Length: 591
Image 1 (cartoon, rainbow, N blue to C red):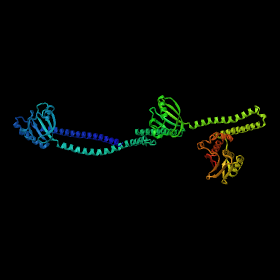
Image 2 (cartoon, rainbow, N blue to C red; image 1 turned 180 degrees about the vertical axis):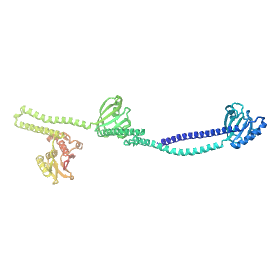
Image 3 (cartoon, rainbow, N blue to C red; image 1 turned 60 degrees about the horizontal axis):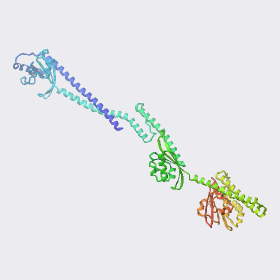
Image 4 (cartoon, rainbow, N blue to C red; image 1 turned 90 degrees about the vertical axis):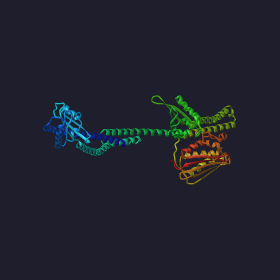
């Protein structure tokens, strides 16, 4: 902007300088012309007077030279000009400054030629004799005669030139002063014109740098003011649009970052345009490193690259499930959807990744659950049906056999009833349709009563039940569900502990907010490979032993769900042939 201001100032100064110089030249020329014209008029008047007083004698030139020379010299003393008398043929008859007989013929002199033609002639030329410019004015004695005698006056222009020089000096000094004043005024004018433009330029640069709050301060309602208003309106519109765009981007980014599915957008050339954080987690790829690069540069499974290539070439929806082993083993559902823009032009492929590992595991567990339930129900029903058919076939007449068979039918029916009850209970617990009524539970009396209830079962196998606990412990829990947890775990220990063994319960506080319950037995133990699955429904380490003990295979699964409903945790440690220890940690207060 400074360059523009300087150029504008310089242009105005040059225009003013040219204008003033032209005016000065015109003034100097006019002054000189007027001055010379005035001199001419004065000299013409003087020559008319001279003609009126001078007598033109006739004779040969030799006799006329002294006369006209004397006349010329006398006239010069009065007119202060050089006087020359010229005959009609151009011969100089007399001159106030030179001897006429030594002077050239003047018939070809410009002023003499014009005097013969028009009556009066004028010429300005440099005099080699006087070494200066002279003004020559000639007057014909008889204007009607082309060969008339001529009287001529010559005056030095030294004074005229001196006056012109003085005029030029004044003009130059005036021009310099005017230049200075014009430069200052031009700069001020240029500054007043360019300052609003500078402000507008600065605001435009701030808008370019995405500072949409920048505004132009409009002081005048002229064309520049209108431009300022237009810039302000543009900035306001851009600010509104960018705010809306940022909001949309923020919403889109929030949606992408919080989606449980991964999203990746790939253009027709195979370059990754967008990749959500979840997509990077599922594929084990750094999101920032891949955006803007080709999908083939990513270290990934060959099947995925093939699917992307197929989608880019076929431009059709592709759905596939692939097992990925990095960063961990999981089953991913891939949906590759072609992107069509407004003009139906192909815009690339949208890849949506969904982790269906848990879903497929649940489907498998559901299938296994149905199969297990069917199997578990089929066993007692088959036993009941088989022994009932035997009784109907005639065994009912044998009292001892009939009583034995009826006892088996009763036991299987009881087992079937427990199994159905556990299935219904587990279904309610998993669907969170079991309401819990929390209240303070005093652990001393609660555990004493619970152990007392389990002693008859333990006594049948001569198993010792031992209770050790800190006194004065309280916990906020659903008392009935907490008793169900304890009885199931203690019953599990009793069932899998050989006769004469021991089951011990130890309760202590971890800190002010949690208590720990440890239930240990000296049973058969659990192999290490089976520990992660013992809380699954119907999972049994020793199926034959479990059925003989009357278990349904759902007890520990129910326990785990009830503990979690109390916002607690349960874990197990075990060694084959040594026994198992279940550790339950519960919060003292429910939040």
